[in-house]
Image (cartoon, rainbow, N blue to C red; front, side, top):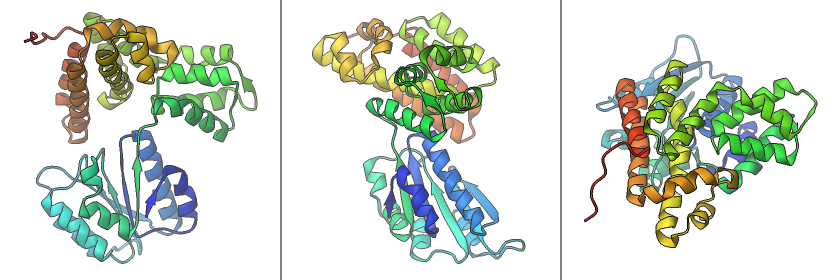
Length: 340
C-alpha cells in the first residue's frame, strides 16, 4: 500500500507490514518516518537491527543471508537497506525476490533518496509496495510551508500568532530541518505562553544556524568572496555539507524556478511571484535574476545533488570541494561560457 506521511501513525497503530519502502526528497520527513517505523518495531519486539549501506559493488547476497540467518539474541530483527539512489540489476532482482517471499520474523526496511517517476514505478518498487507499505516524501511546496509550520507548532504545544508563524517561515526559508529545530527551541522557551512577532524574532536572532541563510544572501548578491567566507565559518562551527546544503538547495531551487519564469516573462517581480518565493525574500532574488540564466541555475541544482550523493557514499572531502565549486559558480565567480 502507498501511504502519505500523515497516514503513517494510524497505519502503525494497527500493526506492522512485513516490508517498508521509504524514499523521497525531504530528509527531515524521511528521518521522522523511519524513526516512527523503528519505534513501532521495537514496541512489537524487534530488538535487533542490522543495517546495510549500499555502494558500488555491494554484494546483495548479504541481505538474503541476513534475512535467512537466525539470531542468537533476538527472535525478531530489523534488516535495513539504505541506498542513495535506486538499486543495480542484482539489487532489483534481490528486492523482488524478498518481496515475493518476505523473511520470517524479519522487518525489511528499504530506504532510498530521490527517485524519478520511472524508478518509482519500476517492478522492484511496485513489488515492495505490494508486499508491504511504501512512502515517498515530497518536498513541502512554498505555498504549503506556512500551514505545515503552523501545524507543527500546534502539535508541539506552541501557541504563536499568525504573523509570528509567517516570520518564522520567512527566517527559515522553507528549510524543514531548521524550522523543526526552532519549533523545539520555542517549545522550551515559551511553555504555555503565546508568542508574538517580537518575542519570536528575539528568540531566533542569535542562532548560529542562520549563518547558512547569510550564505544564501551573499550568493544572491553575487558576493563570491563573502560566500566563501560564510562557507568557511559554517565549516568551522562544525556544520557538515548536508546541513549547509539544506538551506542552499532551497535557495537554488527557488532561483532556478524564478530564472525560468524571468526568461519567459522578463519581469523579475512577476517571476518571483510565479516561483512561489515569499514576498519578504523577493528583494534578494530580484537582484540576482538579471545575471542568472535558467541553464546555469539547473546546472547548480545538479551540482547540489552531486554533493548529496558524495556525502552519502562516504566521499566527504570531495563533497566539500564540490560544494565550494557550486558556491563559486552560483555567486558569479566561475567563468561563464560566451553566448553564441
